[in-house]
Amino acid sequence: MTIFLVIISIVLIAVIVVQIGKVTELAAKIRGEEEMQYEVNRSQGGYMIIFLVVFLVGCVASAIYLKNYMLGYGPHTPASEHGSILDKMFNVTLFFTGIVFVITHILLFYFGWKYSAKKGRKALFIPHDNKLEIIWTAIPAVVMTFLVVGGLDAWNEVMADVTEGDDYMEIEATGFQFGWNLRYPGSDGLIGEKNYKLITSENPLGQNWKDLKNHDDFLATELVLPVGQKIRVRITAQDVLHNFYLPHFRVKMDAVPGMPTYFVFTPTKTTEEYRAELKKFPEYNVPDPADPAKMLWETFDYELACSELCGRGHYSMKRPVKIVSQEEYDIWFATQSSYYFSNIRFKESDPWTDRLFDAELTKKKELLSAALGAESAGKDLPLEVIAFNDAKGYTLLGASKAELNILAGLLKAKPSAKVKLSVTTGEDNIAQIGDIDARTKAIADILYENGVSPSQLVLVPTTMATEDNATTKWVFTLLGAGLLL
Picture 1: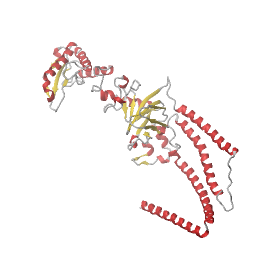
Picture 2: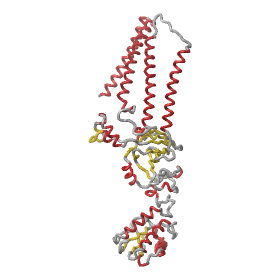
Picture 3: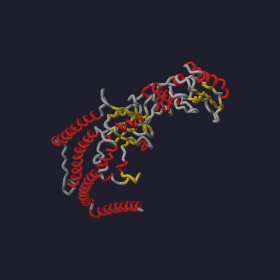
């Protein structure tokens, strides 16, 4: 009903405008074109003054009303160290341009009223005035000089990169249609190399797994940062132009395919501290439409957005941002898993299947030691799937040998422990039963060579798996642990 009334009102206004035009045209014919033109000039001049007043009052009133939402005043003060510098620069610019805006509009509409055409008045043409040109050239030049110099100072301070000796944390944000891949360095604090030629479905960033710095890097679905820590963000894009935008921190930098950029900033307010500030403003003490049980200030979160129109799904690039204390960040950091060890390890794309890393060796020894000391007969030992270098060869992968060496050392140190090595294979591998038995012997030989007694290892015949197309698997099962290690 409301929409219908609006449409009817628009139609009626259009009709009235057309009728006024017809009446004006008829009056001009009756009273004479020249006299009618003078009357139109007078009325239009008056309308200009009315419009000037309404326009300026509307501009000032709307700016005051929307300053908390559009201009960064009120609750949304900057939450980063450099943010106040940018806000100050914008305030100074707004002050001077605001003065020019008001004066020029007053003169524009005032002159239209003051010097409207009248009977007997002649226009005065001034072809040149040195004094006037000096004034309107010198004043803007002086103002622009101060604005440009102030802007350059702000730019140099805000866009400064980290220097040697700075205490900072570096992360990487890669934009794509439509989302962000947020990569953090692991405990080494270093982000590994990547190459777009290495991008696959299981390696979305094209990380170079031969670079050991990549092994502890992890991907996060939300941006979590410690308060008070200087952050350097590497910013890249995989497809089209994106923009890394953190409005509450006054961070905004294009993500350009093939041209990495960066931004350095330091968060100064945790999410909880910012919420506490929002609580002081009445506009945030209303129920959240998405969660009526909570107020808007309670559900507030910083956000990462893309401020480029990067496609139809542009809106979905929004990601939550959490600023927490260093202690909370350390707890969150400890729960994250390396992308390499969670998704790449021992797969076809893993270039390190011939070895186990020190951390893996330590963890594997702890797991096997715990399993052998549990005195839980029938429990499978936590070894990775035994794998060989080729389809029909008998040479084990280096990582498999390393695990077997650990198991051999534990069994040798615990003569009373006994394990069973069983093999299951699928129907597709039945023609390779002879090879499988030979491989089983190769596994046992490694244990024997490392001092394991034949009485500690029981080999059982190969069995067929019930599932279709099952791969061949070698499984060690604890028969008896004896004394604890």
